[in-house]
Length: 78
Length: 213
Image (cartoon, rainbow over all chains, first blue to last red):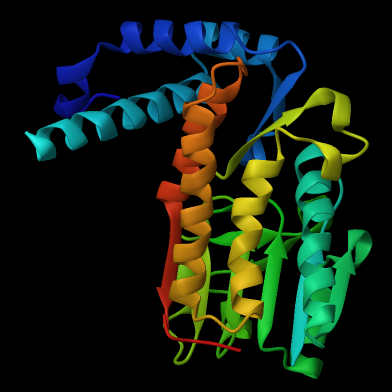
């Protein structure tokens, strides 16, 4: 989350808000299995992201990598 | 031809991947492959080591939790660990539906000749529906993830090379990804698509990429 390429796109706080926005619209019965960390409900994940723990950081990393992949595609096609 | 499958079932994640591995086991039997199904308490290190040494299987399908240098079985008993017993997978084709083991364990395993390892270099993530925990095979939200993963083993069992199997699996991930990103009715679809993309991106095919059964 600290590298320059990431900072060029969004700040940590902006990424966190983006992840929370996406999670908050999920169905209440949705569960997400995050590998060895376990399975979490929507509301559990929202709390994790709000608290900024390892799970929240992981979701932010995935969000950021996903956005970065679009940025790369745009740059390649430009 | 023999296939060893490990299927721990001690939490939601392992119950899901264990249930969906049944599809692979059924197909292997159709292909007249002898399946050694190490389920629940049989998915332990001692049992796996003994079966590999005695039966010399060509194919290994590991389901379970993992980290960068190991894959675990029932109750997280470490089955295969880099620098410890990774040579047990020498000369074999292994698919690990497990987190992170493509990072260190996989590269260590394929230091052996004629050895292939397909796995994930980061977390394998999937979406499920809490109403289907007791019947994972009916869970429509888990289906795109499990079908994409299972494609690795299905392709190998059809006689494709390990690289082709990984490519076909990634194609299925991509197909589901496109479907989900274009959905206008499912509010969970975009988040699920993101995790499909993540898994597809992190799947690695290591070692002998031309290996076939």
